[in-house]
Amino acid sequence: MRFYDRSTGAFIADSSIDPLKDADASIGSLKEALSHYILSVSGWRSVFSTEGDEGRGEDVSAEDRIIAATAASAFFRYLGKERPRILLGSDARPTGRLLMEISARILIALGADLSFLGISSAPEIMAYSKARFDGFYYISASHNPIGHNGFKFGVDGGVLPGAETEKVKALFLGDMTEDLPERMRALSASVTEDVFDAVLSRHEAVKRRALSYYSRFVERTAHADSSFSIPFGVAIDFNGSARACSIDIPFLRRHGAGVRCCNAIPGQVDHAIVPEGRNLDTAKRLLKRAHDVDPSFILGYTPDNDGDRGNLVYIGRGRSAHDLSAQTVFALVAAIELAHAVMEGRRKVAIAANGPTSILIDEIAHRLGAEVFRADIGEANVVTLAEMLRKDGYYVPLCGEGSNGGCIIHPSKVRDPMNSVMTIAKLWAVPGLFGFLTKALCGRKRRETLASLLSAFPRYYMTPAFSPDAVMRIRSTDFDALKDEYERMLTNEVEANMPEGAVSYEVRQYEGSHEEIGLGRDHRPCPSTGGYRVIFKASDGSPVASLWLSRSRTEPVVRVMVDIKGGAGALHDRLLGWQRSMVERADRALS
Image (cartoon, rainbow, N blue to C red; front, side):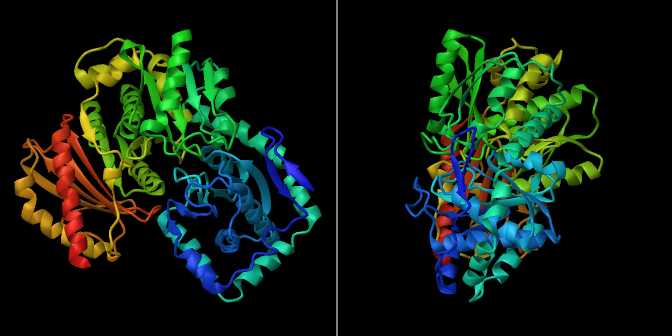
């Protein structure tokens, strides 16, 4: 029987056709395909479209079909239950439908009590998984190009932390034996048509319950009830993402916001997925048109394909639309949440951020009397750090990765643009909050507009995480050795390259949720996979600049970033050039 999603019209599956029946692959071809995968705490990803990075076709190779089946099997076995309750969904990529169908068959065959959610945003599936499920399994490659795809899995509303992901990985790699293709095909074939029909026929009810639960969860996260009012209009460029069939439009309207949207059909991808730079132009144009008709429209956003990131655009001075960098989005939402906590009289207020989050957040937190703690890159790392801080008595209203945009507001364990919108609405919903925050930032109350608040922020110049200048391809595969060479050059050259206003520097090294201060291998495990941060300090100990170096876990690249207080573009470029030079020379020395 053929099944379709009633809300979108999208084809879901044909229970009479087994997608693994003709998946003819050898263990050699599987290992070759697997060599192109990134297996990290942020997700397991590769190029799945047979048409390449930007491929819009649905077809997936035989090798990737078997690998997808094996990944689902590994997660099932990790849960360690005879009949685990698993929630399955995907973002809106063309290859997601087939990968979800394969995963569903394998999970059913192994004995899972499976709920088939279908196309869903990451915050939606993660929130609903808290309801009554033992785990969630999500087909997504987040912000990667549309031809990519992959797998995220977790429990209790969040992706698994690094140590637990390694357990799933060990089960997965342990399955790579000669008879793997035959075993996966046999599992898929064991699912009868009537059994699969029974699971797929419940899809509509599962989706309805998920949206209802997710809507209530967003309200709970914002400490809001049904009477909470959003006093502005919102423009949304969905860019064909999974958020196009999530709660956004009805939720915003129910809370009083006007809504204008475009590219609102899942899969209707109009431009590149990463919601930064020129990819926000569509949202800016949409917001400008809406504002010209109705001045209450002051905010907009564009999500990535799985809908956890949602970078913002806003109406500024001169009634023109502007975009916010990922770092500024994070700083804006964090400033409001921290200010609200301090204004309420909370003690030991803190925020957990990743290493490349701008030192802008340190200055904002300092002015509000809050503390900043840092973890390595990876959503699970900052969530784990925040939970550790709460156990130590800190009040941590949010955490997140400023370099990637968006905040994770407690008790959520994933970024969510709906949370960002609700936080910004607090500026007007909570009496006195706007004035309290602007006075802390610049010593006086300001006119209550978003543009006015943003102009009160300290100025910083930051390398965007997805700028071409931030990405470096190198030949070395030994990240520890690369760090050793980088450190040798750093210590020899730092005095000559010290930025203006700095009198000293400090090195911080990261692994998971742990931060270690100091140079050398004594301050990091071996082998080390974590990031490396150099902080330049003024005479009073405050940071004035930083360098960041990390190896990407979702793409085969090294990232370098510079952060400068004061908006000095020329100084930023000089420091970035020096940093790139050290990486290039370190790489040559190891080749």
